[in-house]
Image (cartoon, rainbow over all chains, first blue to last red; front, side, top):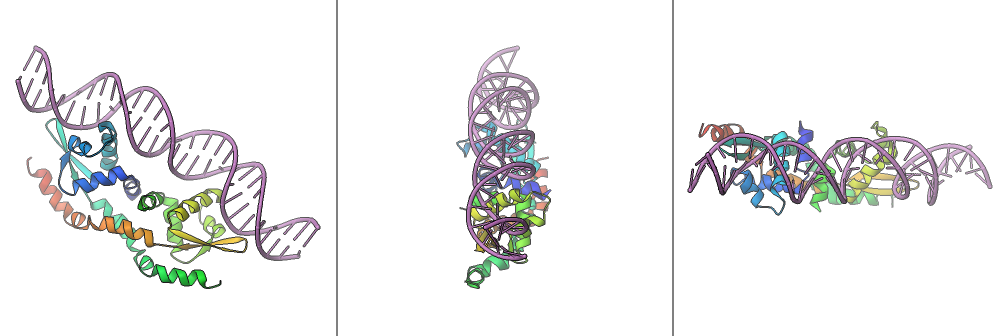
Length: 102
Length: 102
DNA sequence: AGAATGAGTAGCCATATGGTTACATATTAT
DNA sequence: ATAATATGTAACCATATGGCTACTCATTCT
């Protein structure tokens, strides 16, 4: 399912929602309040976040409280981790490669 | 520019290209050879990777050698890092939250 | 010179994406 | 009971995305 995770975090609004949820649960209205975007649009983003498992919603009366579930991000983090050594040495390493046969 | 990075890695083919480049530089043809997708499609992906700075191309005669440049991934890694504590404790933490008022 | 090769672009197409307004539904407040 | 509130969905729209075939351009091989 990690494919969905990559897609989900590709959108800046959705990343902002996740960032917001790091400070604690919130209902849809509260989340929408943070953006210029219309509430239905946020509702759509929340659906995508739900489907990717990045948020979990807990119905509470007429409202729905959204909780962050960061677990799926672990996979992405893992994938990126494999590149760690590359970006650490990359600047000079790359230069050497590129100038190698100049 | 990190926005472009998130978009770039959202596509599985592009991630596969990056994975491939981790093993060393390659020209466009070689990269395209790894996929069922047509060469022009790969060419487009390479353009996006170039524009996001994730690859750097070094023209060499009639071919163009692509090198991985993982640096931009560092930003994404950093963003994900802020969630680390969440996914580590998330399973039981979340359960507690959800069952809190049940 | 002429053929072949590596690679990008143009033009086209179908589907996905993100946004909007209008509407439907359920729960809570008066 | 009725009004107000919270939220999601429907229908529609414009643009982005990813893929394909045909074509162009530059370089290299014979």
